[in-house]
Amino acid sequence: MANHKSALKRIRQIKVRRELNRYVFKTTRNAIRELRIETDKKVAAAALPKVFSMIDKLAKKNIIHSNKAANLKSKLSKKVAAL
Image 1 (tube, rainbow, N blue to C red):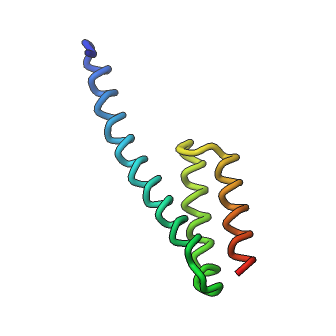
Image 2 (image 1 turned 180 degrees about the vertical axis):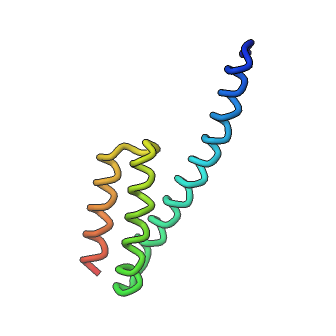
């Protein structure tokens, strides 16, 4: 257990950030899942920029790696183009 005031504060900060990161990541995963099962091209094309934005934000905050973000965006755009 931490003995210093600053270490205790750091533990509290990390807990809050972890919960926020988990929420944002889960929300993005759900959006990706919904986009993948979408069958209407117009709806999927309208949702694509929003999902791309969510993925970019995750990569910017280092929640996911930038290469993973690029792979996700590439696969999703191929999926929407194929509809």
